[in-house]
Image 1: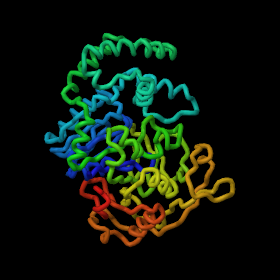
Image 2: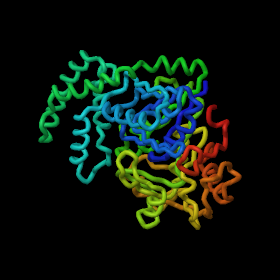
Image 3: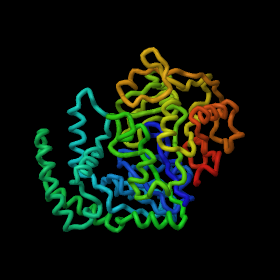
Image 4: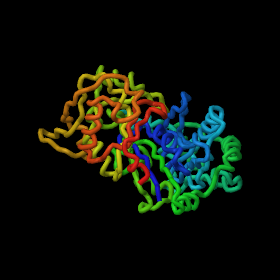
Length: 429
């Protein structure tokens, strides 16, 4: 039962999309299990750049079934724009399937997202204003509209009419005009007509693939510390990006997960508000942001930059039961004389070696750094560990030793080919 989960081991943007593309050719199913088009996965293959927000990155491999899972919230307009763009770029794609249980994002979700964020004033969370949080709120409140209802014209009309009445009341409280049912229904019915052939019950399909011993890859979005329960709450997303969310968003039971790979950068980034112990709010951070092209795929916002936080990474390894690490952006740290990594925190004058769960406490910690020697040279032509500079290998060894998690894969550039497989045995179990 070779079932593999790909999870972000930091605050997202770790290059999970590249890894899903690299391993997607080996899987019969690639299932995205959480989030919406607040996520952004960039893949570069054969010199062509692809940007995904909702479609699993495994779609680039013909013969692969790319599934939008039941744990996701889906903007129909955004999904169709992404699908049309991808088809123009590459004709020979895998099969796109959308779970009938995935929830639909509507314009009122996006409007409320933006209005609520503005109303927070100085306490902004830093959302993408794509309507993701309000869509998940409707899911929890049991008033959300699911894909199966959306593509059924009769049920969709009745559900939208009921929900829109309540949403218009909310919009009017914010001083906004009410949305027209007729206009919204006409626009979104057209999207439903196009998406209807893709919508199916996915749980039996996924279960049969697992039982048949097919390779199933479960694709996460965002990162561990944006998880609704386990992240730096309230500066989190509204779903479960951690490995446990893969079971919730696909219908696979936990005993059927064979391997979990955690993707992490050789430094740390995050987007939006919230504590960030190793943040480099200075010229060095600006330099790493520039050479690493650290700007969001979804929003274009510059990411916050910091040294690698091994305390946080070790926490992510434990939380996700990681089989191995996928280390990305090793090439970006070339030509630094020395490199810092956080190996502990100082809290109120005392050293601690764990990640505080309270964000106000986490905001007070000061990182305790260990200095490692840097390396020089262009790493992108490297194709084996022995090709890497000695100090780069030592850096990876230090990460693995501290986190007690072996390195499975190393990325030394954005292209699909710029990948070193270190431990094949850690990938599919």
